[in-house]
View 1 (cartoon, rainbow, N blue to C red):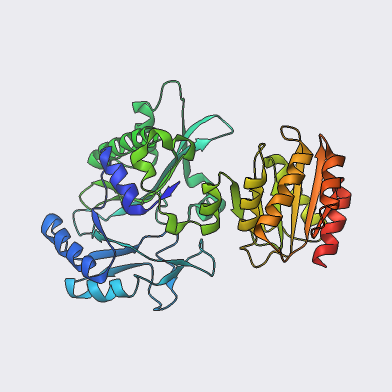
View 2 (tube, helix red, strand yellow):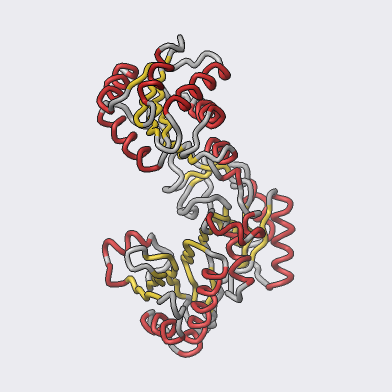
Length: 403
C-alpha cells in the first residue's frame, strides 16, 4: 500500500527521523493558513508547495490546466495562494503517471530547508528494501541525491552504496557508520547521518514496510540530516497488524476497478489490451495472458477469481471486465481441480443471465474434473458463449472473436 509524502513523513517522525516540516492543505485558503503556521513555528519565510499524488517526478511534472510544476517555491506569503491555485484540482502529468496524469486533491506546504549557513547544502539518496535474491533487507545510498536513481545506477553504478542487513541480528551500529563514511560525511554531519539511518531502519521494520525511499536526504548548511521527500510502501499482508496505517489508504489514488475488485476478493490489475480474461489461479492467469498475445490479441486485465470460483465471483468478474470499453472479447480459462468444471460452467450461465445481454463474445475454456460436462452445459445454454477444452482451441476462438 502506497501512502502520500505527508503521511510518510509523519510516520518517519514518529520513529525519530528528522524531516522537513510541513502541513497538508486541500484548498488555497488552507494552504495560506499552513504557511502562516509554519512561519510561526519554524521561522521559515520561503514555502515549498508539493502536489500529493502517488507518483514520482512531481518536480518535473506539469499540471495540464495551468502549466505549473508539481513542486513550486513561494518566496513570500503573498505568493502562496496563487501558486496553490495553480496546482490544486489540476491534473499533474509526470514520467510515472503517463499522459492521463493524476488529479491533485492535496498539497504539502513545507518549510524551506535550503537556508544559507557555514557550508553548502548537499543532497543524498537513501532507500531500504527487501533484496529477494539474498533474502535480507538492503540499505542503498548514493551521493547523487535528488536525481533519478535508475539513471545513476545505469551510468555510474559505482556511486551506489549497498549494505545488507542480516535479519537474525538486525542493523548493527558499524553498518550505519559504514554507510555514512562511504557517503563522505564527517564531524557532526557524520553523527547525524548515523542517527538518521538507524531511525529510518527502525521505522522500516516497525511499520512492516516493503520499501522506503528518501530522495533527497539533505545535509543542511548547519550539518543537520533530514528527509526532504519520502516514498513509503507498506506490505499489504501486514496491514492487519497496523490498523492505523491501513486507515492512511487513499482510494482516490487507486484504479476504481481495482478497488471494486478488492471488495469482491478478486485479484485484478487493469491493463491496456482488448481481451478480458478471468482465470482461477495466478500462474494460469499469466499463461492465459501469453496465450492471448500469441493469438493476436492483448490482455485487458489480470483477473484471478481464486480456487473457489462460483456464480457470485464470476458475475463480479464480468461486471468489472465489462466496465473497460476496450474489451472486445472475454476469455474464461479454468482448471477444475479444487472446484469442478461443471460448477464453473453453471456459475458462468447464472452470472450471464443475471447481468443480461453481454455485448462481447465469451469463450470458456474448461480443463480438469468434469471438463466435458462443463463444456456441454455451456454449449446447451443457448447463450452467446462458446466452449473450448484445449489451449489451441481457445486461442483460435479468441482470434476469431477479435478479428
